[in-house]
Image (cartoon, rainbow, N blue to C red; front, side, top):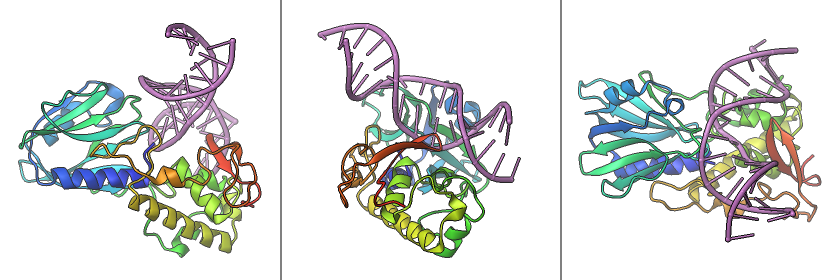
Length: 269
DNA sequence: CTGACATCCTGACGGC
DNA sequence: TGCCGTCAGGATGTCA
């Protein structure tokens, strides 16, 4: 389940491999829900274009495209739950559930594979800035302002991409544990000290996960097919019923914001 | 507007 | 061994 660190790892990996490449041909699968922009427009925009740069905004991978006409566009790739972006030689068999293939001038292909089809491909003509605030660079003061007056649970607020983008279930649980905050606590009722701890915890955990190449729970594989190692450092995520590493209390599983949530009833208050 | 919740989709996993 | 039910969850759309 790719979140910010995994998406950044993939974006960086793809950038290193395909930056500067010209797109000769584009193939799309015809599965309608995968394409937020009509397939014909995606094919039209990308064909003959050059990939100027690939990077991350929120959980979205952005490829800056210089079109053959000279104008610019952005190819937006959201991996959803199970999306992968692979750079392969054209001779390598195309995996099941491949939905888009960009054939590059040097004979390789950039392939979008997504079994569960929660991923989305689209074209943006305007600069894409993402739906919310960028968690890796936001100041503690601006971060605190995001939650003022909000009645939803802090965990749900962290998951809401329009508030802060890039955080998903893993890093929401992990940062709340490290900040010692109950996931169900109302966002607007966090104290300044708690907001400060949460800001620090979130930035620390994201930076650390990016350094390790993201988490790899089951579906995520980076552009090389190499898995990340942050999952070895999960303190709560996916550890329901196991003992807290800090206090040996049994970790509790609840549902918050419709998502499975694991926390330590002793360490998080 | 804000928040809660169902929905999409396939594969992995556990139980019998 | 194999079948079947359950679960996983990001973003969107609907509803109160």
